[in-house]
Length: 298
Image 1 (cartoon, rainbow, N blue to C red):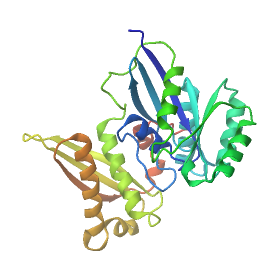
Image 2 (image 1 turned 60 degrees about the vertical axis):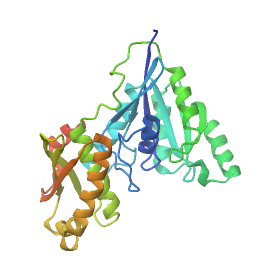
Image 3 (image 1 turned 90 degrees about the vertical axis):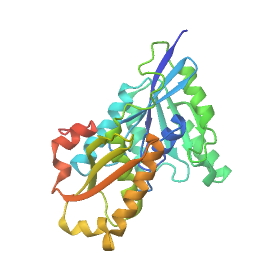
Image 4 (image 1 turned 135 degrees about the vertical axis):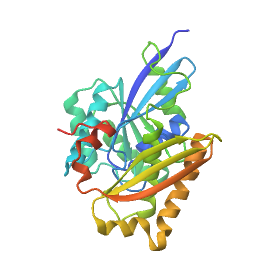
């Protein structure tokens, strides 16, 4: 069998649907999804197998104007992912069009002088056709893109055609991962990311980006179940009540939602314990950056 293997980096502004597209293409959750922007903090590899071709999809953090050390590290990781890939797929929210973050990415791609970039306009079901065609025409006139696809990552329309195109472009070579592997993210980290997603969904605007989640306990039990202990780290004592909720109702709901999804993914019973601790300035801790695969010194 003549195998093929290609690396594809998904670039885009925050909240354009990169993680949703990755999960749709892989067929299972490997990257967290939230209405809040900048939820992907590290590069996530999703692995797709189409007959003799393996596609390794890199979901990069959203590219935006960085203000904090963590922001700078996330943006650097995104551009590094693009530099390492065989193909770059730029995802643009068709409803937002070319906003300031997307314009910054377009300028960056021009400076990289890549031979080809593939463009996917996402959320096309939310835009009327004349406006969509006008946006596509304007982007096509930049001369950056070899192909333009119109998709809805959430509903799946156009995604199969995009995946088929990426597969056809993959270079010949050995597979980089076993055929039954769908991601390179360790399960302990994925479990923490799922809880962080539920945290963002529960809190919406109440707790911005002052929280992170770490898996500190992972115990295989004799009955086949799994005991997972996680700590939600916040930056100030005053934030603890926001996470816990009145009478602990919020953290109970958070734990229930996270446990249900973990059981679906792991296909086994999960006992999930959540604890809340204060760790001031966790965003300036080099150890956190190593765990996320980010460069602390950017």
